Image (tube, rainbow, N blue to C red; front, side):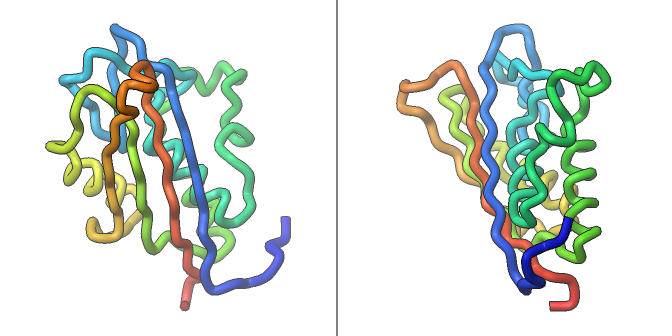
Length: 164
């Protein structure tokens, strides 16, 4: 695959959503949410934050999405730790001589309230991306009762060409 041009900056967008179900652990941004009554139903561990971040990295370079690399029909990906998905996506971005410079993410979840975990999620995502914590913005929203049975995450990522 050839990139269309060696732009100094590229912007990526990723989005992920999972239905919630009792009896499952909710993990967001690599952080287990122990006070959540329900967790994500997914083929992997269902970490919607890391899935959306990985998709944002890939989309910034027109490299597809995580479903292309990790199809939910592949038995070997069942229960996969989403940190692996993110690390592999980051490796692809680095192969093209880009690196993330800034990530902003919005988590929509009615319950539980995540405010107390903002710094931990930002710190964990930053660590996985090799960024300072100040370069990972984390916002939380509710669906105002419109979609109480799912978690949704939207992410934008700024990628910069190495050396720029």
